[in-house]
Length: 222
Length: 232
Image (cartoon, rainbow over all chains, first blue to last red; front, side, top):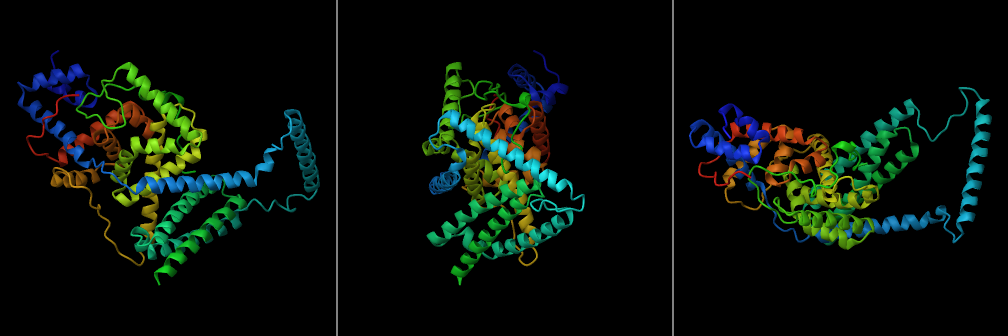
């Protein structure tokens, strides 16, 4: 296979093994291509300098603890709401009947609510679980201010968090990681559903927990 | 959610990376925890089976499954995060967060890409989230404290000056070019795997790598005598 200098870049981008071999052969007689090929490979060689697969002995135990803690929380939640699964040892037929009954009750009650609210007109009582735009803007402003205040607290506690001197501080750090993760999830959910007051309340609860944890860290520092 | 945006169009997904592994042409090294590139079909089938088994164990809540995932990929995951975030502490946090997200979302994993590729995709998205959050925090912290960010120390390599020069040169690339370069050249992933992780096409991955290397080539003139590696 004969290669021309103009084909060099295309081979660099998406050349086959045969084309690479042909380019190597061509470079034996072309100083420009030889230099370009050398420099191209040298970048790849240099990239290996960024490989650091050194062991982090404390990382897996940390992950293991976090996974176990989260699994326990999940299990606890499942137990708390387990009755909703209708798994009281009932047969499939009874479970189906119970679900059908619940659907019927929901349909009737929704219809009742709809009919009674329809008569109140546009100015009637609105669903309080959905935040309307002026209230939503206010909540978002308050939330942003609260986030900034917590970020300042986090900045104060940064030294202890980055270099935990005691097992308690290490444990606080892990707790904050779990809280941050939950906050990020909730923020993403509220981003998709900004008017959901229930999500906002959950997010607020998480922020309060984070604030408390950061205050505990700063208290311990004193 | 943190793991949202992981869904890929069907055509862009890897049905199973080890089975569809493309030939890597440029020089590369085999890494722990991944099959060789010139691997026999039986070995790729075994790797695919191991991947599926790993996913199944994690789905079942078997902590041993997560431990195995960590044994095979933990160090590489940390290195990916370290290079994306610039700090070993942030990298460890990102790896831990990734494992938690895998545990939370494993029931939604349908096997349309390999489990490991899916895990790395979560890791990369977690690093993106961390980067965004860090920028936001820095804006707040700048109000009262001034700190020098800079890259934190890492294990010394054979050519520390070369590494530093490369890190500086990488900072001049676009985020996308830097990510593709790091995943391909540093971590040794294939374009099909990178496409799955970054939710782009293989062609886009190849083109982005080419642009990244061309830009680096202009900034970084590596020392002569390092061209020992032949075509791969």
